[in-house]
Length: 421
Image (tube, rainbow, N blue to C red; front, side, top):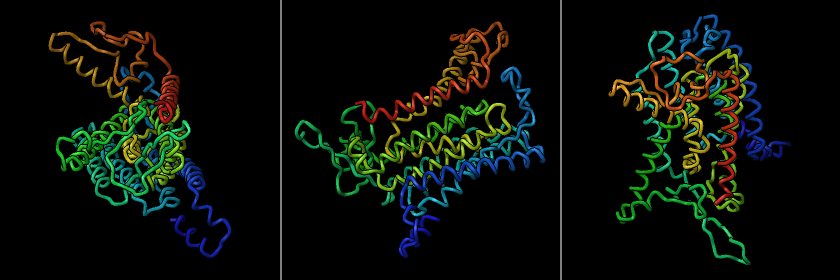
């Protein structure tokens, strides 16, 4: 909103009003404001929740040895993150930008889905809404996002073209006309563009439509996978919020270079006009997450719940899809991927053992972060664990910090792929 106000004032030569046209200026203001809102509103929210005794149930000490210190801690802290993200984005973002609208819709939809789940757990004493309903909600969002990017005339790119070598230097330019494209970036490959439509060359004139259908399906899958991965990662104080802030910082860098025609040409990546608004939104989100960590760091004063974790995964997934970097998500979201794989491996290996009358496990416990806080003697003696490491129980703060470090390394590698081909 303020963007349009100061753009109007700039016509009358109001000093300083032209600064609002700079992405860096708006992004920094957004980051600062979201931090302030998150810190201020977070304190009020915690007091309000405690006064109404709206807190998470006591945790099973056999799963969480530190759960005794978490009795009475309010949940649904994702509301803090969402409010601290949406308000600055509305104030400093360009609301006519298709990508800003998609991000706001993603945040509110998955936040609502998570809120219903958290509310059901608290007020009705259930395990939350059925997992199938959450999957349907995530799939519906992915389907809508994919269709909007397919059908909207504003969601376009300028494809990069490598010309002949001139004086030993490869000159890269972009097509002058914006186009609808199913092209995505493949990391570590020199000619790093892959068009989903090219997979269906055998369909002739129908290959473009088939490529877009595949794009929509991939978008749906990515939203569901990353959203569930972030949900699984939310199990320790500061774990998901810290990892997500790092991931979104990396995505903000990728969004910025994708929105800058000269940097995109230099890095030989697609130029995505309008994606600079993703930088503004992501800075609001990073500020909200860091402000939330003020209360969520160990020992946590509030938990984000599914209200926050589902929205986090959706924001990360949709951002990567918009800038055509979804194939970088296994690097950026390496921790989320590891959590999801650990659960799948644990579940299937346990089923395999049950059919043979054995209690088999891949890890001491899943999701992956839980295996590091299993104290000696907690596992039943008849369990056969494939990877029985570590032998002892790590402090929760150490587990969280080490997961952050891994995320920093993997996000740095994802950014470096722009040059390593």
